[in-house]
Image 1 (cartoon, rainbow, N blue to C red):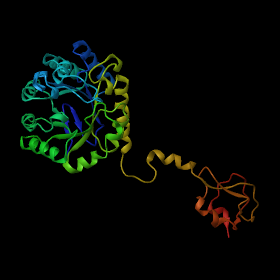
Image 2 (tube, rainbow, N blue to C red; image 1 turned 90 degrees about the vertical axis):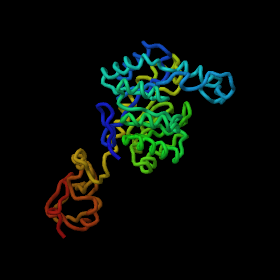
Image 3 (cartoon, rainbow, N blue to C red; image 1 turned 90 degrees about the horizontal axis):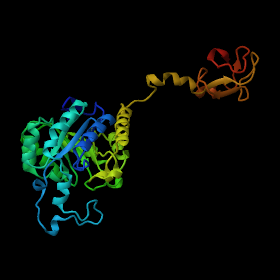
Image 4 (cartoon, one colour; image 1 turned 30 degrees about the horizontal axis):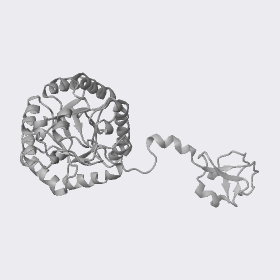
Length: 351
């Protein structure tokens, strides 16, 4: 496993988590809104914006049959025909270049998910630094082969995928020239339930496929994403919207700007907190050692007086003998007179 370079950024365990703001169709077919979303993502500190590159006709068929309508009662898009939904959510091809350029000007990486070979070629003509393969396309081996052939890193979501299906996708990518592969643990429900997210899969997936693993997160809030960093996630992808209440096809499970900013901050804090395996005081903790406990004289004593539980006490700070010596000095005598508040030292103790 090695670090992966996407644009000017390196992604790996030694770097803060790479945060991707997914615009999806939350722009509601409004180019000015899309630009504002890119600007807001940059202001929130996101490292990348991602689009989705398809047309309704490249995604599905415009036919009047039940199987082309979303039937599940608990589905966010219940009752929508697939063609109508994709038509509403699609990002026009002519928007890609100006949105990518805006993102780059604002210091972000910009790329997209292609959903067919033509979209791969289109994005390649715009010099995107990588391709993202969506969960539902992970089994589209010809698509992965074509994207991999462009010689750029692949980020692949794994929602619903079995170990065998992930293995097939990785094998295809490698056979077609791509060794820079990042997998994203994903739960393909919209929104997703934290209890169905199974973050413990992340380290298992990393070990199984010897590559970096991140999280494509459809849960509400940032808790799940922050938790994933503790399990080694190097990439976090979250859907983004300016205002959930204003609508957008994915608004229900998307982050607003303040939440995205918090995500960037808290995932970096979680990454910093991982540190290394270490026992004992760090350099920053050394000064705090003085506030441990030690043995102090708790009332005035005369020379030759015997130490007892009445005239010695274990208290803070830690300038006297360590508490482990308390029973050893009980019954011994003071070498000289001692005032209350004296930190007991061995030279003050005689048998």
